Image 1 (cartoon, rainbow, N blue to C red):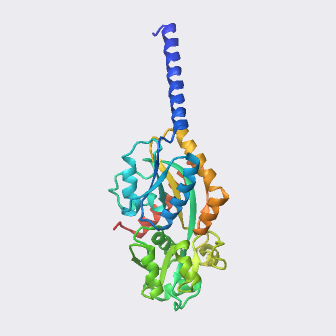
Image 2 (cartoon, rainbow, N blue to C red):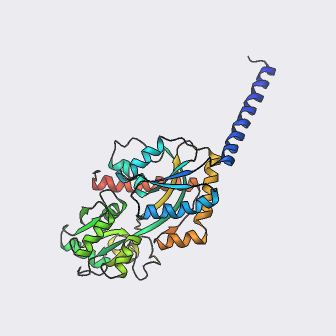
Image 3 (cartoon, helix red, strand yellow):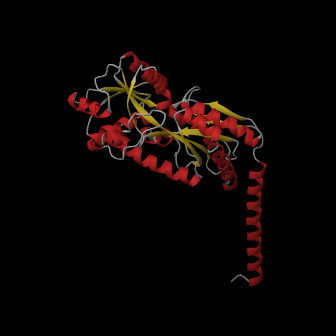
Length: 332
């Protein structure tokens, strides 16, 4: 049996070591950032993710008094940038702006070399944006009820375009088809812009896109909006009904599908540093200037705790994983 004096000495040493580790972690958070901070974006410049990341980093530079540099690393629906992020130290010097596809990529590509939920530190949800289903002006239906009736009449031959297989836009239509008991034919494009262009040209009658991407063509009446995918309508498209409100009798009560944006870091980020970065992110997202920028992008500002962000992403993975499994969707 260990003698009492020795046991007491061991306990004192353990307490001192723990206090030193905590002090070191807190000191690191206070000393951070040690130079420029990088923000990975897993998509090309010019899209909604890139624009929101640049708006956010412009404000972070002021708060951190260091350059915050957006690095576009497109590929594999954001998975390429996420894999590169994991090879870097968890020191807060490199972060990443992710979107909804971050938690669904693994269902589409089981060989993905990381776990989207376990291998990263969630820092904050930044914003979410509803999607909008748009149609060519000559499309015979003017709302979602008539569109669903047309889909049933055409017996699974009604075509729509999306930014790609497994995108939240694609999955939102699969969820719509499942809940309403209808069928559509999916045409994947390399980007939302290409899907929108083909709808404007009349090559595909429908497409599902982010509100921000479709808004200019809606305002010019090059396409007409049929419904948005949020629980309720959105101020940026007044008069356009939400699917859940427009057709509850079609089984769409409670329907919701949104494109969301969040900031993550590699797993192992010290909690005091994670808390500091989170506090700065939330302060900026809730500022009037940033809220206006987000709303101009058709997005709803959020700002959350790391725990809320992690819980939300877990729920999203469960929801869309079920959609992918039921529809037997495979990655490209």
